[in-house]
Image (cartoon, rainbow over all chains, first blue to last red; front, side):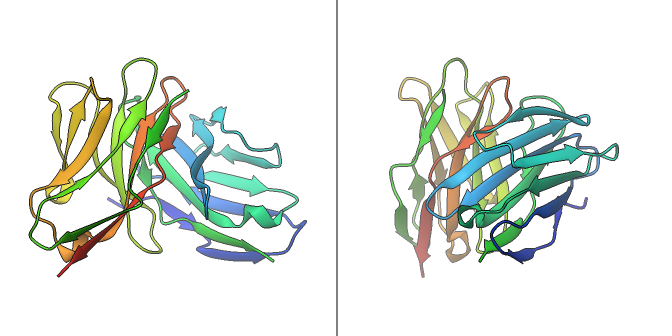
Length: 113
Length: 113
């Protein structure tokens, strides 16, 4: 079975720009999660989508947003990029049910100059 | 609020020796606990989970973890370490209702030949 796929693998942007990251979940998974892995800050939860709806978000400003499409793929949008947004952005997916493990993609490395 | 602590930034072990990576947690209610491994420039790979039942959980690649409710610990173990086990290991607890995973700060495992 194909794993979680994320695109692009790397991105370089400048302050103030906007970026869109994409994620395709494992077939049969309806929940998608986004995490930020920034140097020195560890892994932090950003957003959770299930059945096309945003179910929960972490402690991030509103310029971080996203959506989930009918095929369960997802986008993460970040507006007005700041230097501290430089990080690895990880997408994960899972089947429905709280006990299901989340399976991660290899991430998008975002660098802000 | 839930939290996870991984008290060791790095664990060094000789190949063939047993290894332990420590994790303690704090949640209100029953915990869902997970271990993930991250290799360089890759996403997180699911190793094992504890939801309920036996305190000793077996996972991928010969890893196992012992759940101890009284000590609120979930230590990762392997009877015989391999050089290829060298990686960054994360313990995580699932947030009841929110589905977000709260991660520990990670422990770097170095297995020497």
